[in-house]
Amino acid sequence: MGIHAVPEEHLPDVQAFREKYDESDVGHKTKNASLITDYMVDRFAVVGTPDDVVARFETLQEIGVEKVIVAMPFRLEERYEIIETLAREVMPRFAKTGA
Image (cartoon, rainbow, N blue to C red):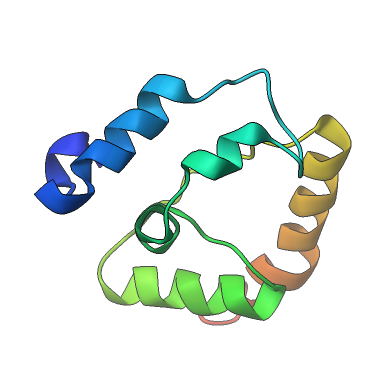
């Protein structure tokens, strides 16, 4: 989704995030986190427990989203853990529904 779809009242924060985001600053203590607003989390992120992620994917599926890009601004070890959790606890719940 392009920036053109961001409501005007949230546009300055989203633009600031895009301009100030430091790709080399990753991990749970990243300074990039200070650039993220609640709107951005609600609009662009899938976060939480495996149950939270499943619920978010189901909501996205209901509104017609067919593909999700998984981008993880974390250290390599954290990425492996997230991928394993997705594979073990999230994706099998969709295989059962034929989604």
